[in-house]
Length: 144
Image (cartoon, rainbow, N blue to C red; front, side):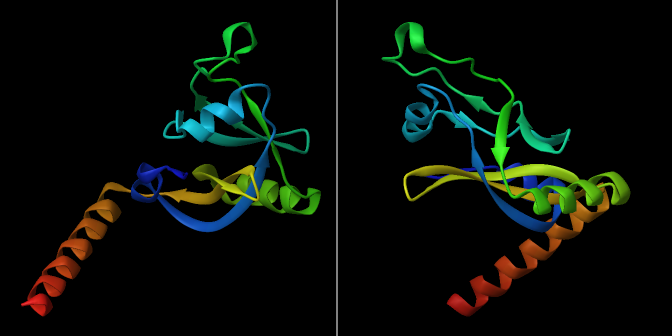
């Protein structure tokens, strides 16, 4: 099960990718396994040397009753201290943004692929669309 943020690659240039663990509570892991997770509007934030993801939506678990979790709470991400410092320097000095790219499972643990991104301008987006159309036409001609 993979949850992708398709909007991220359209709106940002992804410079680097980092794999993080997510600190989850209670029924959140079951909801992610069901696929009721959305990272479209979420972003990463570094505070006091720790990495967090904000606005990550994980839907309520159906059989969770009173033990259900808040759907859009701030969740801590697990990463090595040196990597966090490296990312922190790039975010503060170079103006990068931390955007979640996908949520997936690795060895039965939920992981988040975090991208170090720079925003695209409208003309960059149009250029990408133009290149995609050209590539699609080339592939179509080769098919026949």
